[in-house]
Length: 452
Image: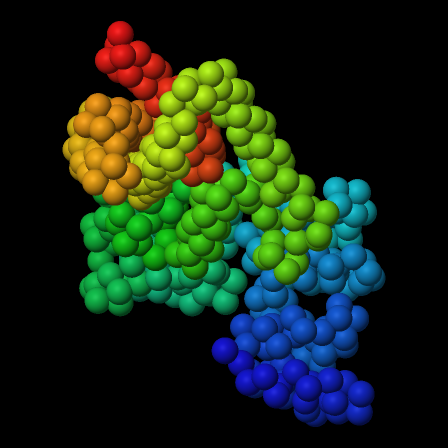
């Protein structure tokens, strides 16, 4: 966390046009700290501050700004300055920004960018959003096969200034197909006269350019890599994805799941950076849908109106019945969604999940049925039969809620959809409808039979 006094001091330096102070602010502070302070300024003032440091440093600070702030800044800056900035940016950060900009604005910028960078930009922009290709960087270290360690180290010295990382070095054949890799440690410790084919590792773990970014994150976490290579259909190396980018992806995916779990469409930017109308829409769409489902619950209750009049006491235990089923379903859904997010489950493991949850539901249902039975019998002084209705209903509703919460995320994943879409509010709403039907149907079956 930066010193909160930095922002007022920075405003004073801007007012006094303190060139030395502004230059020190840009060049002495860590770029992330400088960016955090600059977030509190307007876009014009940020550009003024950045003008007091060289272009490479401007890019370092700019890349640490939030994406929303970057988009706001590029809207009014002149195209010459923006094109120079884009040329210096790392390829993955640059594509993330361009994807958020107006396409017409991007097309007007393209002729002002160097040909090599322009071709790279168009290639990365062509990959689907959230794919490995859309988040990779093309600034990787590579070496040809038939050279010695001494030659390799010399080539790396020349490549290093323009590479995202040189800790992993990828070995390519003449067709740029990926044959192996080495760590920088391997090269430093090897005999200078050894040839790369004799010391490189061939047991490569890579991802395809069209793989989902969530899969990439799982692979990188599974093998504890600092970076993972991205290849095309011909096994040609097209880029790498580094651990810092994966950290951003993991945070993004976790945030999206958290939003969906409470029936909110994921926000592109932070809460405060999201416009009011967008925030209201993303929350309102789901709330309206859930309201329609709730109306269905009301309709079901209405159809049992005569039963409610005859057995007025049933309404007392309706909250217990609905809460038991909804809570059990939400628990199951959360556990299954998390299991799917953390692990790449096999088909057999998914079947195990589907078989296990109903058994857990039965166990939980019996426990909650006991609570409902004792409460109805002792607390509310109901008859043994009436308490039995409550207990039986609670047990069935818990089992049904558990099965719904477990199966719906699996079904959604089966059809290529995000399991988190089956948010807890939706599962609770569906559980309410089924809970009312089960409750009153059970009451009719048992109580009418008892009276007759």
